[in-house]
Image 1 (cartoon, rainbow, N blue to C red):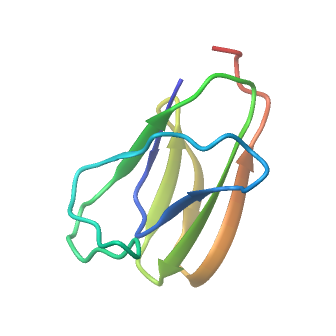
Image 2: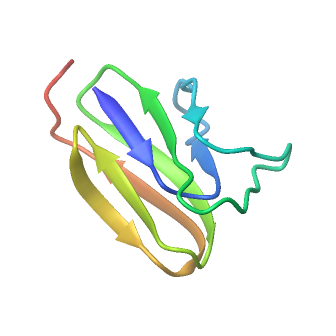
Length: 88
């Protein structure tokens, strides 16, 4: 499975196993970036995934297996869980 996220910051929920995250843009030590069109992506195995993002009001989309699973345009910390995925 592949997860892509267009967001300024990506965190995994602390109780879960952290994923290695690849990004298309420069990111500061604090997880900030200002490059338009940046994305973050990772791979995981399992039937669900939870991500936590801290958006500054720029639009972001959570895409899992090629489908938009959530859209956010408000500032603040948000948590998304996508369940019922094929185990792969």
